[in-house]
Image (cartoon, rainbow, N blue to C red):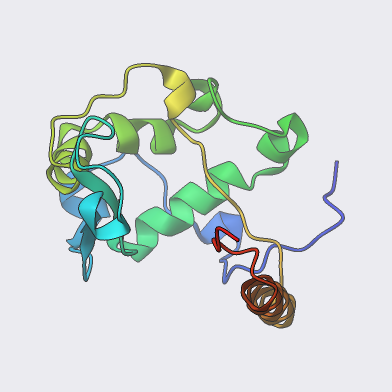
Length: 162
């Protein structure tokens, strides 16, 4: 089954993607996020959730080689035909599976989250969002959102109690 869209990803031919097991020394390239936002930063009660951390800015976790390996597994024709990897990563995306089961990976993510995390269920592994919009489509969507937000604020429906 061939998808009707073309991924907007600088990719390399699958025959040029490295093979082998996930190796944290070779495949992790952690660069801390510019900022980690707390619940308080987002005006949420500090006792909401299990950690004071709400979200971080984007950050680099994997090397370029690892990203190509992940993309090759996730975007393979076999996996796209299934429409999801959740729960099947160990079988269909072993590199992805091993990357997220790695104690080194979990240590990095745990430090960001402010508590020790574990992958409890395999359904948590390989949940990957894939963007299929072009830069132009993305700009149009952001502009439409901004226009709607401005309209809502002008009409008094964006939090005004009256």
